[in-house]
Image 1 (cartoon, rainbow, N blue to C red):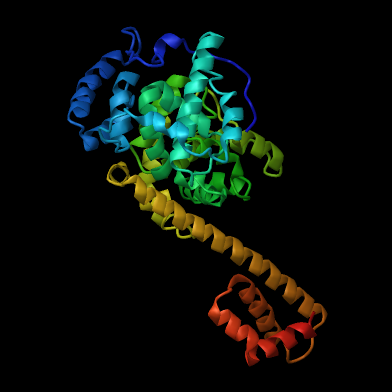
Image 2: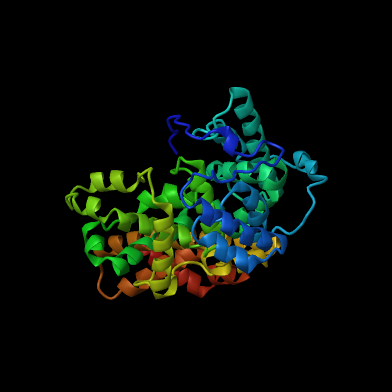
Length: 422
């Protein structure tokens, strides 16, 4: 992803120090200050009791978790981190290097662009901690694949939780909430995006018919990074993370839909034929978002048009091992072990390999059909197709059964047919 122009607008005083806790309490003069202060009492009780269901309701409601003091306790609860000790964690440095560490170093060097405002020395120290958190998670779970923009997510967790407490939370986030983005292919991430058009179609058919009908790749940078790459204000992205951690894993897609719907008039003014202008506009989010209104609209969209009831087949094409189905809710995530996340990741990898093999087979079969049309001979079309599929099947299978067929009379017949159309 392209680097961004520095434009920091948040004082470091509102952020936690590297290794110590600090409050980001609401100034008395701020609007809704009294409402937030009243909410804090309920949040503190929920945190003390590790009350997951209460935290889910409070984090998803107006103003989220209010400040970082609450988040330091609440986020690990929402992710099911438990009370594991951070002692003895230095052992990760002796683990084998992860294959993506060079890219991690490049991206970490571009981190902390918008926040916090600190000296270069302080920012360098934060970057060291950010690198350590990312590399620790990748070395402990080497099956995870790093993606550009992952560092945008992790830097928010680092600022909220600190260098010692961030790795366990980031590990659970990676394996149980954003696992689909950490596979060898972006196909699972794109399958998330394919839910966006039917949401818009259900909510606003006029806008849907006006937008380009191509796959919504313009939403990838936002949804892939939980909006951490595109939102510049620390307070906004921390509050948005409250919402995402407290709701269904599909909610970032609904939030993007809410953003599009909020821009309805602007988008309808663009000529339908100006596809390039559409994509440039759709891929760049406004920087002054009314988060509370958008959060409410996202929840309303999700309630009115839940994923299984969306038009088309987008939801049903998503793998049952996807985070959108295997660990949808915070309760699911909190009760799921990391080992289960790894098992699901391996299943998704296997599915991706099979899909890749199938796609290659389909392309070769299409080529064979094209050749058959060119060299068509009456009465042998079906047999030739069988010969082509047989050849593809042999290429994918090396077991005893395939060797028997390859060397038997069926293999001889099909090889002769295949040779006829070579």
